[in-house]
Image (cartoon, rainbow, N blue to C red; front, side, top):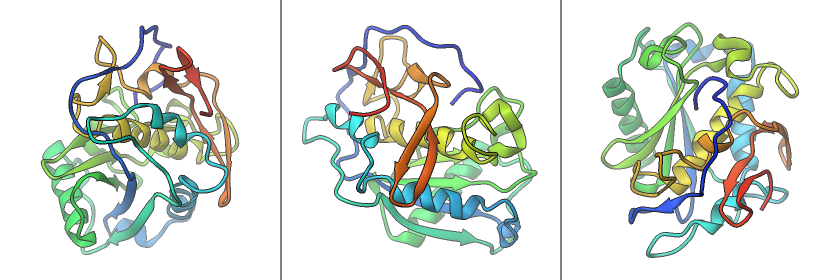
Length: 241
């Protein structure tokens, strides 16, 4: 998720033969003992967001169901939140490199006992840290594959302020659901980049609609800021499907 990327033009997403997530499940790993204090309520916000996704009222995640692989398509039958772990065995590093983030994702996968494309491990770094150069590397978050599970580098986007979505829709935590939702949708449709659904220039379902027409999604757990997603069926960016 690039910081306020320009709107993209596209002829649509193309399937490249790899897997998609059939039963998307998010595992939140709050990295470091810095999370023992969470005065801004980021933990509860992310737990509420992913706890509500996949359940009643979520007509946003269902946009991804139009993108199958050779086995099946994404489906949603209840909350996508599979678990939360605060890894407070020590502090998260001040300047984690990609290999460090991948290793923490694997530690999370091991903690939860999960693997495979359906498992999406969010490595959420604490305030004041710079995972992979954030906030000076031109992104708000990114997702990848560590060899066994999909994972997301989720920096403390509030540290980037409005550049990563703070106060863009409802409140200062907006960026966590806008950016987190962006990576979640991309992991569903392209968990092993870029073997899933991408367009001819390599852009994913979230990239093509980043920072356009931001809105709110009302879930059983509350109201959260989101961005639209690319729909091949609609030929453009939509917020429900």
